[in-house]
Image (cartoon, rainbow, N blue to C red):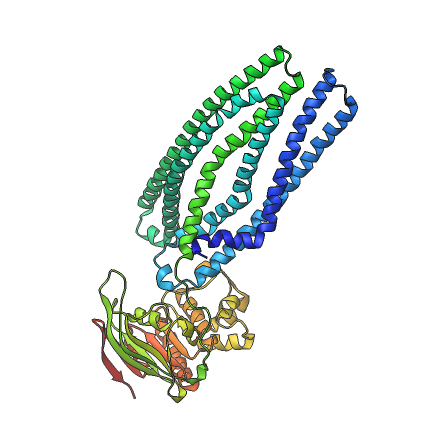
Length: 555
């Protein structure tokens, strides 16, 4: 099955019974509406003496029972549809999160966070609306239209033809309207994503904005973006209003003629007064689904655009999910042979790089900014793939395992920018080892020189806000290092992980890392610009012009 149908097929697979029930409830509601019309006609005909087949009060009881029945059915249908909508939205977002978390990093990293958030939250909700509200309403509306025309034909076929004549014009107009509206809606959604992304950046970097006094400029940029979006929404609204006006003119002409004809036939005594009242009600049953169809078109257009945007995400290539079956303790070294790599549209970052890092070594990776140090880390963690050459883990016995996303479990990583989540310090530590005991967490904090955590009033249960706000950068770095050590993985990658530490704390931490590397048999690779960090390492690999041109051994 093509991925372009994955979203709809997924939701239909899990919720087709509920969606079918919503549709059937809608059909029952339409049936009750027609029964209501028939009872209204019968009640009037009995009251005016045009029908003597039924007792007046019996018809009244039927009529009142139907009124209350419709109220109960409508209420329950609304409740059921709303709960179904919430369930489907939850399922869709969970599936999208799952897909995105396993999407290849190099395919996903170029997308803006604001755009991703917009797709996951807003677009997912619109897809749900399409299945639960829009499509059932559209289908039921068409059935109601056909049913009303059939009912009319039994009352008076000649009057019915006055209505039928104008319906093709309405649907022809609706088709043109839908195409135009979808184009406009696609542009509006794109602009909304751009604005959301920019606003997200403003929130994330508001400190820099304040420091450099760029509030006015930022507000001006936001204002321009909002104005552009408002202008596009106005265009959408103008088209919708003008189109609705044109449609109403068509309706007024067609149904006006039909009404005049019906009243004229009543005057001639060819139909009853109850029939005219029923006819008027049926006209509203035709007008309502037709108007609603036109009103639904912008929403349907928006929902289809949302599906396209979500399908773009699902079409991105995915990583292999299963980890390679290997004993971490058997990893003897990391081996790179003639590894070359370049990002799209950029010059070659790595050019036939060779290196070998053995178990029990703490190696410094140095070089000026932009020489490919972080790129090597991405390659080691399977986030990127070498264009040429090979990266392997050498195991005991001479076996070699190619490094890719399936070997990522062998690596613990401390990024340059501290990554702490909202929640407690305990929650953040357990990301590295969900089954770790409190004793193990305390030990990891001690090794990372983060004993300050235990002195906090709530200790491990101290609540952090997004990004670790409330902690100093150095404190946050040490929690990140503790998390990596707690994971107890055989290969440790640290990217400028001590840049925010004072010299004394840094020296103590580096001494602990030296000792751990030997005692645990770790393979530790440390990106640094700090000569003092390199002094604590066994070797230094220096990157320049895409090559490792120096390697120093330390005794």
